Length: 479
Image 1: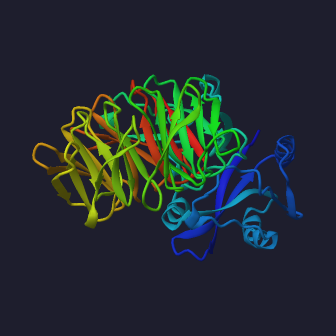
Image 2 (image 1 turned 60 degrees about the vertical axis):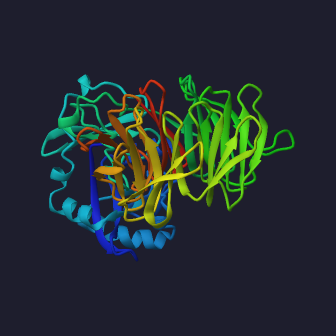
Image 3 (image 1 turned 30 degrees about the horizontal axis):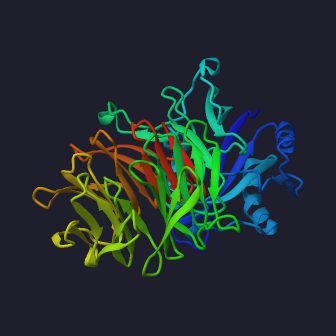
């Protein structure tokens, strides 16, 4: 379809010190390209005789709140594109105006082909097919190259996050970067499905014990159930005359250990227990505070813990409050159900005895608020994620720190152990998911694909699927 693909930096600066404006340029057979866009029902603006602009053609956009700036003024767009058009000396089509890091801009300007080293010359006839990607051929120095582009998006050399959009055809790995030293770990890393349906951020995901139903809670006040095998939506819990849904964003969801109940916590300061047979609210628990941010079932399913400025332990059968503890932000039960971990004051982690409510330990080492906690399957290790961008592993026999996992560029919002206990998955506001080797503390692989903060991750019971939820309004299943 295209004879060549290039990307040109126009050198102008935005109001942000770390971001420049970048033009995604396509240079090739313009008639075929316009025909292709028209078939996609894409609106094309002719800014001048030699400059075309398709502002709504590209689905790859930086949608994070801190950088959500789009060039709507066509005069501004034309002014930015004119120097590029003059430099190229021919007609150009710009697919989008996006913001990119200065560091990447300098690297691309110096040696773009070195930066994009994951693109390889291949025999197109031998390339496997991909249901979600469209192959794009282009040439450089008389050598044919192939890249893969998400369907429904105008082909462009890279997206706003510089995630691995282009597949290395030798390894067929576009959505992740792997540490070869740790490549023998069997973990989900290939994108299987992208689920769309929520109208706002997806805050939490959970998988039922059978591994066939996925639940998601969103900023749009709803909870959705999805079929894990087909990716199709099965049901939506929302407020209406026929059911008692939440009045505010759903922050957290979790299946009970036996799978009969789905618990949801919301900014409306309630916890709802949904019967998974009738899809109706079985009980509503009124919490004290400004909203329920986290919930956790005890392993036997008899106790539900919730966090809303304080921690409350509820008897599931009766809905009565058993204990109130001074914890915050995040909570997790130990596998034996005897211990509860929570965030604490001054960036600490508090450990509580469930039967008495007594504090049995305080873990101190994080430099900012603790936002995520998870116990290893054997109960010997506690993982904690923080707004200090790190993850820490703690020895629960000694209450001492084993190691710090460093790699995320922003806050860590979710951590979960693989069922085999050998690896840990983490989700961050740097838009990525990372796997870590528990034994060595090494980063195994980074998963790319979300366009914004990743809020929650969960493994299927057999560990073959990882599910992630993001502020880009999507849920992704990795296999």
